[in-house]
Image 1: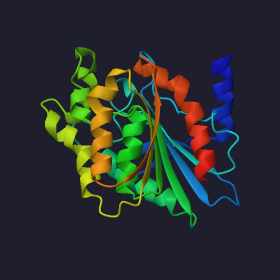
Image 2: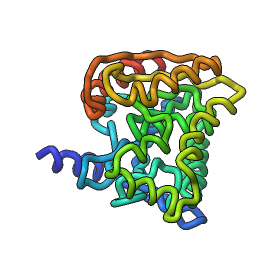
Image 3: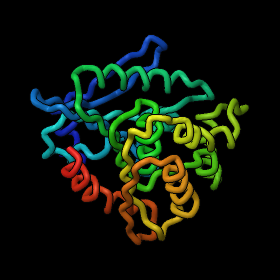
Length: 251
């Protein structure tokens, strides 16, 4: 029943395909409102094991009368995601995503642009949010050191190798440095960060505490929403309410 409802939602939104001159194709959904001066862009987390990539927070945000753009990360191993960055060490995917975002951000004179995501999607929202110098980023339980995250258990090795190539064209450290370099290299300090996380699940000790420290050292404006759940997957239960409350405050 739920699957049928999701199919109806996607059909109503008209799943579209955008092709870059370098050959990469991006699937996306976009809803525009004539009077909206805000664009909210959503990046997807990893789907459940055995499933291919899906759009996130389409239903959660259906009550918002703002322009919304959802980008699918159906690349990488099993088409489950490549962090919107690269395949086999080739960064043409990042080139395509960057140009796509610039095109969509320019369709109106937006007064505010917000990037959103959880876990993998949170990483992408921060990476591209800093790259595009957007106004606000809302991230839930995001990774920070990408190389560490993709090599901490053997099950992630196919995802890691599909991103960096086999033999690897990028080292674990080079992946780790991607997002920290974006934070330290941003001189405008324009972007505001809204970070949801649990202090009781492993990504806090492994990633988020270092992310928060670097953001604050770089003098970004950071708002934290702290919960106490034990499993990383539980972000899907806690983040939607935080997302809606935050959007209602900042739009």
